[in-house]
Amino acid sequence: MNELPKSSEFGIRPANAPADHPRVAFGRIGILLLNLGTPDGTGYWPMRRYLKEFLSDERVIEVPRWKWWPILNLIILTVRPARKGKDYATIWNKEKDESPIKTITRNQASQLAERFKSDPRIVVDWAMRYANPTTESRIQALKDQGCDRILLVPLYPQYAAATTATACDQAFRALMKMRWQPAVRAAPAYFEDPAYIKAVATSIRKSLAKLDFEPEKIIATFHGMPEAYLAKGDPYHCQCQKTSRLLRAELGIEPDRWLTTFQSRFGNDPWLQPYTDKTVQELAKSGVKRLALVAPGFSADCLETLEELDGENRHYFEGNGGEKFAYLPALNDSPEGIDVIEAVTRRELMGWI
Image (spheres, rainbow, N blue to C red):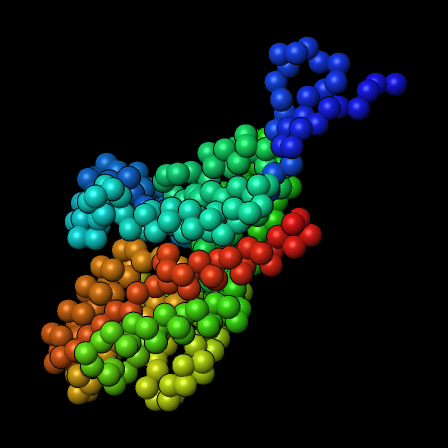
């Protein structure tokens, strides 16, 4: 009968193995934060690589390949990289030479790790669905550190096939290449989690208190999606609406002062409505002078919030007669933001720790 292996805290070496036999790492638990992604630079080629990966995702663009491929490669990837590169340049973190979403997601992982530092079994890391750091490389890094259990945490409060599902798809593709797979869990959407609603409401109150005006209207704006995706059964629209209702109730804001809209539409097909940009313009034209926007669906500020909301929509409002405009920041790596991520991870780790 063979001897049982001799184990150490986070590794094991077979008892009869040679002295130089490598230790097999095991016994740790990985937490992998997953966010959308970012180009590696604002130039044409980094932008083109990023956009090609993003817009080639069948979870994002549900158009037959034969129809979409020539549009993407012959038209969009010819003209769009330069234009989007200029947009990214307006928000680029020049100190670290990266986009804000990468800076913030790294900070979120670092601060979450600090909150778990009392448990040496826990390893926290982060990855992007598109571009770098890749999901596959970070799953492998966690496994190399002895993580035989990994919790995937998509940083999307509301579930959508084009966000949560594709983030998990990418992780599952990485697992398909592994002979010795870790056990994996994926945290569900947290659109109605009391910790999330409380944190966003607290953040909104703090941001409003810093303004030199009281908004006549507050818009809760969420990233849009084609109406066809809703018709196919995607729960995203319903979850956004519930988040918005819960936030308004938590804040005690009158129904006629709070609006829910959808932004960032792409292409010519109808998307979820009402549209944010059109709503902002209509409010200004109707005589609203003071407006605030908040984006509860974003866990980290990015191009769609910093450039589109705080830039483009500010211009739409002020250009149509509005006087006071504010974009209220996402939770980001604030204490409230980390509170939410910690609450979600601790709940989903039950039974493992």
